[in-house]
Image (cartoon, rainbow, N blue to C red; front, side, top):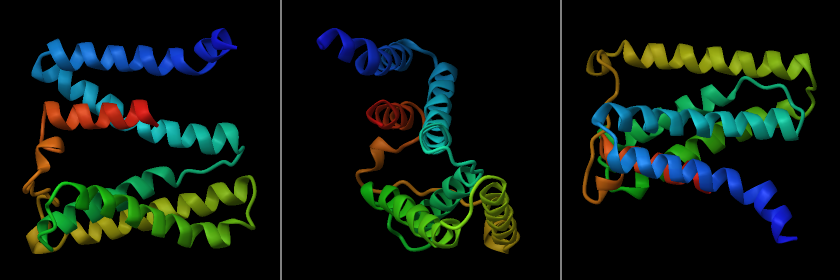
Length: 171
């Protein structure tokens, strides 16, 4: 049984974790940036893999939910002063979950191409709302995160890449 567990479930996360550890420990600033970006997109693709591969649902709403979470974290830390480390991460998860639940209620009746079209509509609605938000004078350059106390885990560069890689391997 241990051979099956190793072959089916433990080998891939350990290899991915080892590759991230080597890159994050010895890589240049550019390699660390690329590793962090790969980890973030890996999380997005893992969510799509579960939804489309395991559940068999065709959905394009994952990017919209990622955007909702990113805006929630940035607005909480910038506008409302909630820049202590776990708060922006929890706000991102909560906002994405709430929007996902709102969309999921009518989406329970959809299958196949209709679910695809409903989630595509969600993607365009979130994109429209984000563009309107960035047209406000205070957000013309985008919404930037403010890093507060205890935020060294989510700071730019190596700490952010390490956090994203750890979350990816854990998921």
